[in-house]
Amino acid sequence: MANWAGCAIRRLEETDSTNKQARLWAREGAPHGAVVTARRQTAGRGRRGRDWDSATDAGLWLSMVLRPAVSSAALGLLPFAAALAAADACLAAAGVSPSIKWPNDLLLSGRKVAGILLEIEGDAAVMGIGINVRHRPEDFPPDLRQNATSLEIITGRRVPMAALENALYLEIERRIDGWDFMAEYTARCVTLGARVLVIEVNGEFTGDAEGLDEGGALLVRDGEGSLRRVLAGDVSVRKG
Ligand code: BTN
Image 1 (cartoon, rainbow, N blue to C red):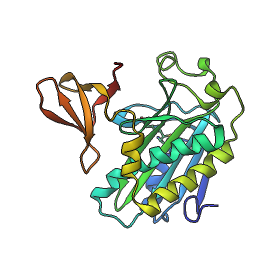
Image 2 (image 1 turned 180 degrees about the horizontal axis):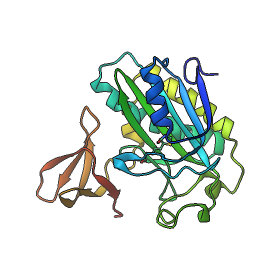
Image 3 (image 1 turned 90 degrees about the horizontal axis):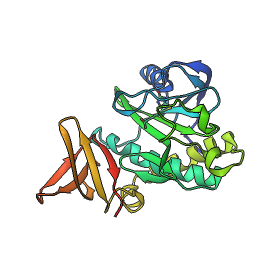
Image 4 (image 1 turned 90 degrees about the vertical axis):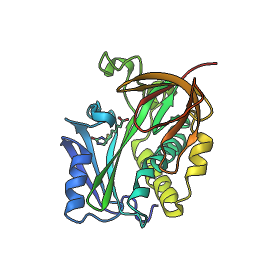
């Protein structure tokens, strides 16, 4: 059993976004580890202003309030801990180990199975985690179908949602208590060391992903030999 992760849980049938609800709770003083889950989100939020498709009971949709004893700058590293934790929770509950694409997308068979959204609320962080569990291919909206998958599509077996949630709490707690997860992240992130295509608002370029800076930005060596710092672009790993 986890000690603080999931110490208080608000389980909602339906809500707009568990991140939004967790932020409201954080403002009212929700403790470190408090969680909001929902069976369905009507306005699930993804990174970079995107929507997150969150149909009833199709996945694990939850947000955790975190108040770790680290600087506010270090809070930006939390999604890396969450990506490791979510990948290991998938292994524990479903027997499959998603790869981690920078910054924190989890992929199985090259398709996205989980995503993470960090939002800051005052002095707290709200970590939103969405894991696609029960979807069949036709359950995804047509525009997502080629790029998304679920644990049950991959395994062909029923995945116990409670086991997934509990494993997630244990894995998050372990990473955050130790606060020493960046070496593990660097070793496991498939983007690092790969040739990548970076799509930014002002254009795109191809380069070699050489590493991360101290804030977690991706350092990519472009065709001219310059090291470029990528904060929020769409990055895809190229073959070969
Ligand atoms: C991404 O774009 O990859 C991040 C997706 C994060 C989705 C989760 S689902 C639970 C929580 N509530 C939200 O509104 N978003 C996050």
